[in-house]
Image 1 (cartoon, rainbow over the protein chains, first blue to last red):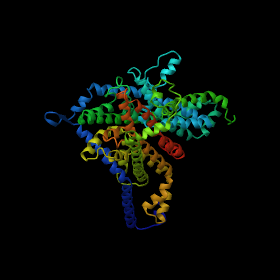
Image 2 (image 1 turned 120 degrees about the vertical axis):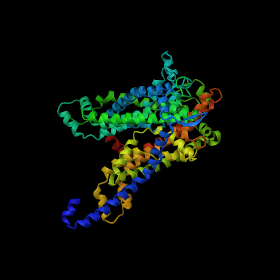
Image 3 (image 1 turned 120 degrees about the horizontal axis):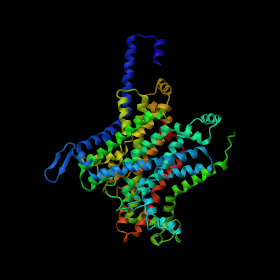
Image 4 (image 1 turned 90 degrees about the vertical axis):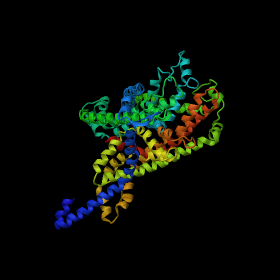
Length: 313
Length: 287
């Protein structure tokens, strides 16, 4: 556009440059005016806390001798602390099991809802999405009831077949109990994102594939899934970030399954315990910062990796 | 090859879908059924998936809202305040910033946008402890601001608005408005904002839901239970109820009904606004 103006309306070099300078300055100002308010919040509530966490994590508070600078000692302590390590190992195992499960279920539901449209599937779509509107805390409370021996239905259902109900609040089965809660909570949300992506595909592609003799399964596997790969990667990232900072559900179930879930069950719970139960804010900050750093690097590496891989899908 | 749907071939898929729907609805059904029971009905060993003989929603509701001087009602009001203040504030900031990033080429734009994208990967809970420490030095902990201010930060909202503003607002329209003599602010309010409406509703809903659902932040920030949102409040009750099983059987029925009542506002919001948010949600998912 600028080129056209210069061609059609010849003017002296000087005024153009002056005008352009004015326009540029105004654009800078207006840009910052719009971005500025968020920028202030961003600095005050993201950058400042992160910097402060880093600062705090470099100190140690002792009963005798007060607070002293210890450099990376807190991090050395964290990465050799059995509580932190077992918590980290738990969230990694939990991610490896629960994320693929959630995505497979979400993908299956999205493909069905995309292929079959009638009143029942429209109703199903809403009902499957419903748990997303439920706070994770309330979801955990609800499932805690269902798992409970006192008022859950499991005892009755298994008694019908003469069996004993599995106790999902016991230390053997709590892992499965938590996987189930998380899947129930999030699969519907991921389904909606995938469904929206599927609806955005040009139907002419399916027609062309059918002409070439592709069946329904082949269309789903070879056309639909590759085309929604960006949406799949997006929900993978969401679920990875969410799962690594796992806190609400185990914290709520703790009161029902005290023997199965310790106060250091996940890194976030451990940081919370250190900071708020033991007033050990320096070490709590170090755990928070280490967790944040690991998640950031992990997700960044994942995005980098999939960016290369995506073209092969 | 006809495009006519063939229901008989889809039947297995629909049966499978039916099973999934039952799975997703079971917890709601359990809560709806059991919030109608009194303590004996709850612990009497009756059918846990069906109503007891005496259905007493009104009595239970009255108990819920009068227990401990109407504490539960306060929690609901607090949650509403936090969700509205956090949601509206975060959306306002996100809309402006997204528009600014999309439509102005200002110095430092690429760098600051890269920072916002990086912030998407920072887990929100990692900020809770240091924010608490900062706020406690400013005397802000245990006030409503301790919950509202951190909710204003929504980098994903900025990202979503940026993508939407970039694609849904043609530069020509903005230039035309400017040529007609409209200032930048008026151009934004009267030309750009109406075009961004689906994304605005989506971001508003997502940030309000995030505030309503928040647990870790208020749990850390607040010690006065009269400031609790409903999530922290019910968590507190549940801890008390399971702590001493014998004396607090009545608290369990309050928790069950409390859980049911607390999810009703969001369920209604989602269903009534679904036309708006579904269009906006796909924007973030496609890119």
